[in-house]
Structure formats: C-alpha cells, structure tokens
Amino acid sequence: MNDAVQIRDLVKTFGGGRSLFGRKASEVRAVRGISLDLQRGETLGIVGESGSGKSTLARMLVGLEAPTAGTMLIDDKPWPELAAAGTRAFGRTIQYVFQDPVASLNPRKTIGDILDVPLRLLCGYDASRRAARKRALIDAVQMPMDTLERYPHEFSGGQAQRIAIARALAAEASILVLDEPVSALDVSVQAQVLLLLQQLRDDLGLSYLFISHDLAVVEAISDRVAVMYLGEVVEMGPAAQLFAAPQHDYTRSLIASAPRLTPDAA
Figure 1 (cartoon, rainbow, N blue to C red):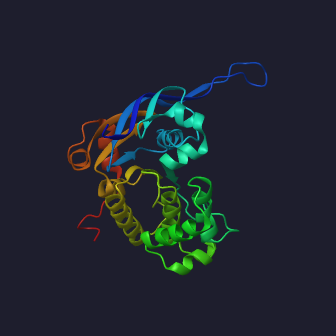
Figure 2 (spheres, helix red, strand yellow; figure 1 turned 60 degrees about the vertical axis):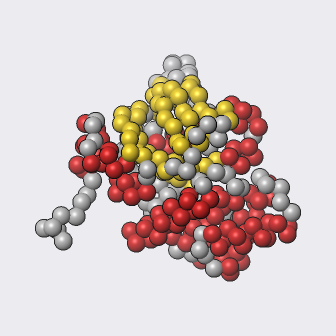
Figure 3 (cartoon, one colour; figure 1 turned 90 degrees about the vertical axis):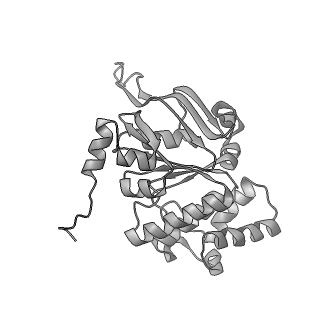
C-alpha cells in the first residue's frame, strides 16, 4: 500500500450522555464522516478555522481520542489494533509535534533526559545505543552537542521546536502529525523550521500531516491540501492548484481573508 494513513468515514462525537439533572446532554459532532489519504513521503496540509475539527482529527490519529465511527489505517495497521497494543505501538508508528514547543518539554529535565525517554521506553535501547542515537538526533535537527546537557528554558522558541522535532523522531516513527508547529514562532524562524522539516522528510522518508490556520505556511510546505469546515473536508487537491483555483466557497473565503502584501503596502 502506498498510503501512510488511510481514513474512511471518520466521525468523532462529544457529549450526548446524561447531565447531572438526568437530562440528555447536547451532542457535538467535531468530525463528520471525513475520508482522506496521506501518501508515503508526502506532506498533506490541513487548513480551516478554529473549531473546524483539525486538532480533533490529529488527536484521534495519535491515539489521544477514540473515533466514534469510521476506520483508520496507520502505516497499514488498523487503529483498533494499535489502540489495543498500547502507547508503545502508537509511539513507534506515529508521533505528534505540538504547537508550543517549550510547554511540551519537561522543564525539570535536561534535553538529554527528555530524548532518553522514548529511546528507552519505546525502542528499548541500552545506554550505549541511546547515547549514540541522541547525538545523531541533535545533529539531524542542526543543534550543537551541548544541547543535551541544557534545559528547555535555555532555548529560543525555534530551538525548542527543533528539539521537539528531535524527540518526535527518536522512536523512528515514519509519520508525524504537526499541529500548528510554527505558529508561535517569528516569521524568519518559521522559515528555518519549515526548511528543516522538508529536509528531514526527504532524507528520512517521513510523511507529514501538517495542521495550520496559516495559509502561506501550508502553501509553502504542502504537496496536497485538505480544507476542513465544521468537521468536514470540503475541498482537497494539489497545493498549487487549490490555491490558484479554489472550487469551494469556503476555500475562496479563506484565501480572500488571508493577509497579503500589496505594492501599496510595501
């Protein structure tokens, strides 16, 4: 199979049970029967406003939420099979890169200790192999070797995101879910991190599901783009084609509302 992820008719519903007073609670359908594929070696951008279901989709993919209905194949493995196998199975298959890199790193541990956790718990490496792998990871994300002895608060946002990417790569998963990974960074630093992600994808054969509300970022990094609106995928296609000739009214409104530099503003 050429797909890293295959999703069919996926639904996620919250609520619907009984309230404290015995009344039926309202039901919210965060994801409404979406179907999409992430091809191996591809970056699939997911765009949409807050509340469109992007992050709920991401959380289901990495095992943080269970789907209400539908099917997901992740690296040819059915989602229920991964869930039954536990955290280690998910961690060796698919990893999550969070929006806030500093908050996602334990402030009480050195970077070496943080990277040690997935290498020990997910990969089962001995101390010698862990040490070599940590050096290789830090080198891969273009950080100095003394990074391993330092703490998260000692790094800028861009440096912390490089470290978070290194942690996601530690378990040798081939699929990364990147949830607004550069939105907290300055524009110049965003460009550096995006270039690093593209290089790692090409060098390591990774597949990315890249979630963002920033259309310029999604256009720059994505091979294809899926547009989500109220829990549904309303349009999907090659990035250049979708941005040049959007077909759905919602996609057109998103593109029209995105800030652009005009000659008068320059």
